[in-house]
Length: 67
Image 1 (cartoon, rainbow, N blue to C red):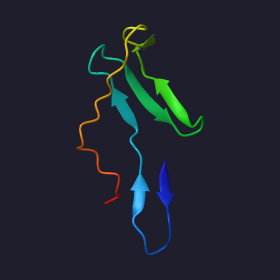
Image 2: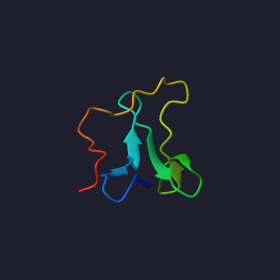
Image 3: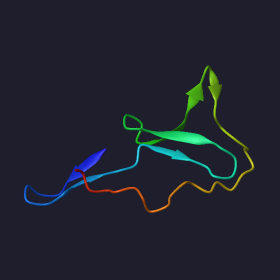
């Protein structure tokens, strides 16, 4: 998903993938549904622990400005 504010402004991009640092759950952004979806690997959802209070891997390295 990208957002263009005006022709002379920077293009903003959003993250497409996230992983919980506690349980390993992996989600990918579904642009058609406008929501996060659990990643499936070999037919198995990578849902981690359903009782986890997810700690997403947001560490400040993601740059929201398109290059």
